[in-house]
Length: 304
Image (cartoon, rainbow, N blue to C red; front, side):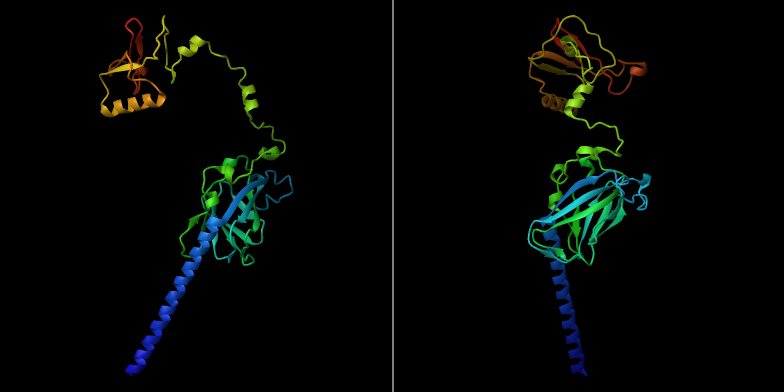
């Protein structure tokens, strides 16, 4: 009896141990797959068309609002050794509704918000070394700007730690999005919008009046509600000498930090008096942040 019990217990323990080893090996293999895909896959996007309906695509049948859809070509290149298997998923972000994927080896599923799940089907056996896979994505509406594409897609497999795909781990969209040019910036073929360039912006602003030198010198940013430019001028190149009568230490530090950022010399000889008078304004002018700047050239001083 005891021998039978001991043998049965030993068999169960061995089986449990082997199962545990199998789980560890599976987890390790899944993590290796995630790591390889995240580090090796070079992913890029290219707008193929923004006028899907006019090009004969069944936008309305796919549920596209306004029967408007476009095609984005997602190109995946395995820049490394072969990665076999299809037990993984890539999570991508899209500001447009993804309606369908035109590649039998993949499916796409909306999860929440801008998050989508790209999953290989049974027909996909993995990425060969150096292989390029093209995945056309059908999206709603149009894609007119490179910044419409979102970075940092990530890959998961089982219980392995997810990893961001390195080729998409950047704010520089030029690194993974092809330039949108030609007629691709049009929402429909009849779109009359003109693609802005440096030359077109210059032409659009050519009627802006050029300020005189005196007007520029009298300008203050941000623009006050009202100014009165008196006679004379004050050259502040020598810098200011602060006479602080109002700011606490933190406020003074902030003032000096902003002056340093703007290149204003606070070690000069032009007296700059800083005062706060809560009763200096009334009516509509009595708001938080209101200030009155006065300068006196005869005394070579200024006040705030």
